[in-house]
Length: 389
Image 1 (cartoon, rainbow, N blue to C red):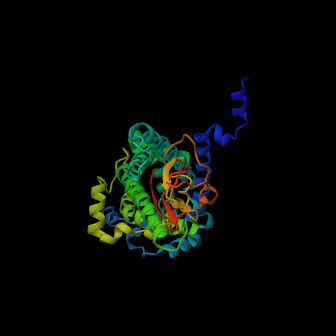
Image 2: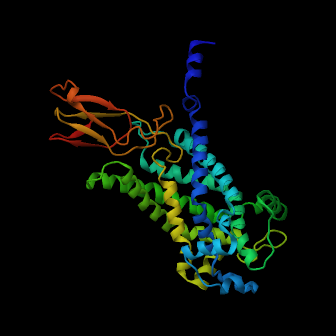
């Protein structure tokens, strides 16, 4: 074995197989997050189905006449009427979804970043490319994961069907996949894919743009430092915007996925996502598109808080040339990270926050040329200013 090969075997697994390790760690983190927040997702789905006007055409008065219950009363009702563990009904396909979605999104984003978009001339990866790449990667990942989303939504509604005296559709997760495939074919597994990918695109767009904007504003214009409080507030705002943009598509997606179907797997309530949108607005009012908004927003916060280490599968790295004018008291503070390249991945949270004090440098009359180890916007404390090198 050669010396380089021996040295390589001594490296940690995360450095020897960075992408594989990142995928596995992201999957484990997503699974834990899913288990912790799944009751909110179940509550959201039940709220989205309440008062569905289109059911009146089938003579189904059970759901249409049920009193509308908010998030807390719906969750308590599930516990009282179905049992505490039913708050996790459908969690298995939800975990499957995370594996497929995260993998598809990460691979797609890496390909778009390295092959399609590439870096700009100054070796930066600008925000607009990150937003477009994140949206496209989210759309493709969501499309691949649509069958798991379909099964999850239908299993989440099984407890409600039992209470209404309706027969259960599935005996378990694998039976659900097999039955949908047998009745509707491959196409049946992708029922509701149009509003599903629309939601993914809108959520990614609102999330990425709002988070970066709010974080920069807070650090530059308020006493807040670049710490967990700033990230939390930024996530709260980006989650709000993402939920406002994505909830209508999510409501349409859930209703199309859960609608009764004939023996050929065709929907009996809605012909398309547009038809579902029109019926919901005409029969229940515009605000019906925001049923389940609160649990959707609360659940989204958990996902958005991990972005420091995983922004659409991107590594955090670059060097930025900066010239500092003469000032021995000047210090630099990192206020933002940008996804750039896999070449030299930065370890999570290695620069939150991190400061450089230039007292120990030998500053010449023209200042100092140096490189910051990460891509960062920099604020200076002192009498002098920063300018590009």
